[in-house]
Image (cartoon, rainbow, N blue to C red):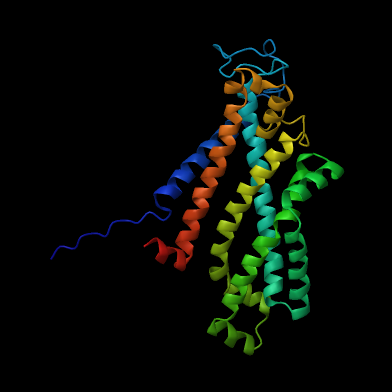
Length: 283
């Protein structure tokens, strides 16, 4: 009797793979930008406001710098900040959410009330004000974003910890005197770990949007090319009043849109895969 092999199921689905493809393309561009010479996108290579031509596919800006080099180098800056913020925020949210889930009541209440205070404040405005007073360097912007974006992920992870904590085998282990942190790390990880993936993806998406907005307002680092900084110079030089916006403003705007859309598709696909309620709704 012949048995037919069951077809393999795509873990992320079609939209998830589209998102992965778009994100891989952006990461490849960023990696290529890291291999360019140190002066790429910063040195004058042509006359100001040069239109696209051979050897200068996107033309030059008001200082004669290659806009294609700025786009490629800016990919590394924008993606690096987004991923660093996502890692720091996920770790911070995991620590705070875990402590609020398994710690004493006074600790849980204190941490969640602190999260509530930050949730009341508008994130983007708080980011702009903090960057204006503390500085616009890469490290400062990343630290500010991580400290602003942790409340929502921390609440999500706290809920995951409480759900895992209610499992029978963990209740029995706690009753037998097993340390709470050891139980969480040893037995709760497989229940809580999958929640870290959508938290990471969602945070990276928000970080790209917020940092591009900050740079567009002129509060980014002017010495480091990024997609938001390019759009700032577009607005400052009134590029939208001429045809130059097609090769000066459109590429970085499209890069931001593609990256955010790719992360959104990955996040939705992962959540549908990990959340049983979403899986049933999709069916």
